[in-house]
Image (cartoon, rainbow, N blue to C red; front, side, top):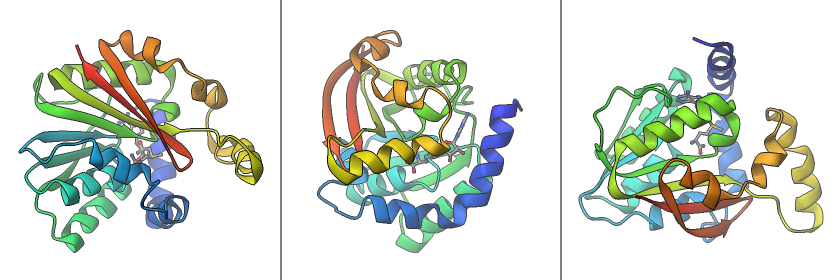
Length: 213
Ligand SMILES: C[S@@+](CC[C@H](N)C(=O)[O-])C[C@H]1O[C@@H](n2cnc3c(N)ncnc32)[C@H](O)[C@@H]1O
């Protein structure tokens, strides 16, 4: 396991128990929550959905809740985060959500296994080589014409929130975090054969919607 993975697994093992509290605080308005926005973009049509770097499963669980005929699989490296996700699925009685340990850069699943691939608040955290490998894997795992949904941080446009954001979460993030926020998503995703369709603004974040081509 490379240094980045060791540090990441250690960090998320430590914060797994409090992660969802922070999540609820940041995304408490259901109208603007990126979790709800993500799930709204997934049709309830018997689809298979992969949530990459799923953490405590916020994205996968919301999809499973809103789309009862779909099946959502969340993968992550942190056992601590995955056990919170599994407890969340059990507590909510969601039998269409499951979680397993897997590395986003080398997923042991066949090509074109999913109709939709999603990842939230994760790409900015990966070193560039791991980010590229994860995107190649997402493209490999989704069917032709399938959908990619990415939630990433977005700088608030003004006021206290903008000042707060310039310190946190940047304080905790790797170098290049603020540059990553300014990414040209159309050009970036085209390198991985995804075509950008839309960007939706959510609380503290944006939802990027693209199609595999
Ligand atoms: C900021 S958390 C985001 C969790 C969740 N997607 C969310 O929106 O709350 C980033 C997650 O990426 C996971 N992660 C980092 N590198 C990974 C890798 N190579 N493969 C799988 N998961 C990874 C971490 O364990 C952590 O749970």
